[in-house]
Amino acid sequence: MLNAMVAATKRQAEAMIAWLKLNPHEWEPVIYGQPIKKLFGHAKLVRPSEGVERSHCDWVLETLVPNLCLTVTTVPANWRLPQEHVS
Image 1 (tube, rainbow, N blue to C red):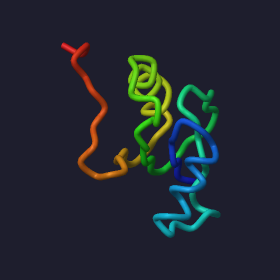
Image 2 (cartoon, rainbow, N blue to C red):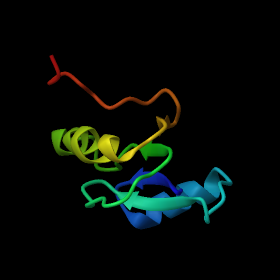
Image 3 (spheres, one colour):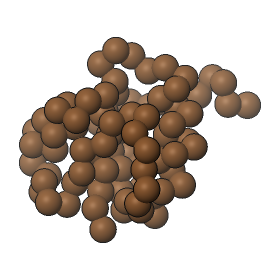
């Protein structure tokens, strides 16, 4: 089972996989908003360079999370998706 490195572009995701020295055979670059049709083990979210928008949060909660069986973390570790719209 592959893991997902999520970023604004495929190139950014691939760069983060290389920078963190993760095995590229175990991590798949995924773009925010991309349709997902398979199950991932773990996911790491990279903050979008253009800034976080509601569509990013919606995609993570509605598309990515249901297709994960383990964990979601962020890069850097202290970054979080804003959730002001969640009550």
